Length: 331
Image 1 (cartoon, one colour):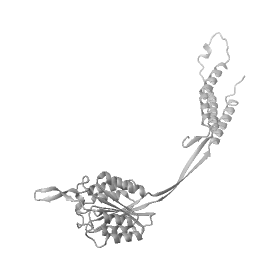
Image 2 (cartoon, rainbow, N blue to C red; image 1 turned 120 degrees about the vertical axis):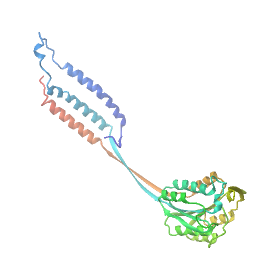
Image 3 (tube, rainbow, N blue to C red; image 1 turned 90 degrees about the vertical axis):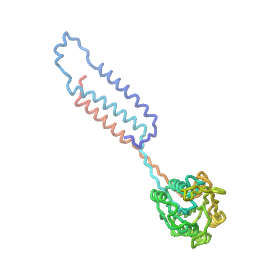
């Protein structure tokens, strides 16, 4: 009865505490209303039992107490409230272009660059439930691993399947960008974004990265570029006749190119030298690319005191009818 009920004057509900006192007063008065007779013997009354009518007589007091309780509730002005929201969400379409070349197996990030990039990207996706995501992988060539989708579970599962060696080795940054642009060019989203992550220098592919950035700019696509890898040298697993051994190789990232690509599209270049730094970069991108959510809340209150007052009135009428008909007593 009291679900979604609020009271305009809740302090009146304290009056309900007098109901037990009223019950005790009725009980005390009923005991005093019995006539006192002096008889020589009560043997003739011992076989008499109280009738059902006598027991039901106490129900008159219950009806009156219930009526008083309902009147007190009505006095507190119960009100039901209903809420509704109009939510308008303008999501962002984001394609993640991920380098899967052999150098992504370097272990300067833990457990290696590729696994660290996959893990942090999945966390980023989980934190943006209103956006569509797509996945492009590239090395010596590029292809779409997952088109734009709102099913984040699907794209995160496809992230798990990404491995180095899936495609021809090399670093075709321009082709990776072109494939991502192709997925975004017809999008109607309020914002279109490419997050490109690589650890190398563009050395393959049919399209120059700067030309790809020009095309992205025409379509209103913003590009964030991330160079992943430590400074100097990095441990890299190398297959030898004696098994896999770790060798240190020079880290080469074309930061100048990645900076130009980002700046041409009003994006930004970042350098991730550790797992912690990579997470910080994605948090910064998350702050810069926020979905627009318009929420309009409506709240409506309806007075509910009438039903309580009506039930109390009916109970009082019913109690009076019973008192002066079925349970009428002689003075």
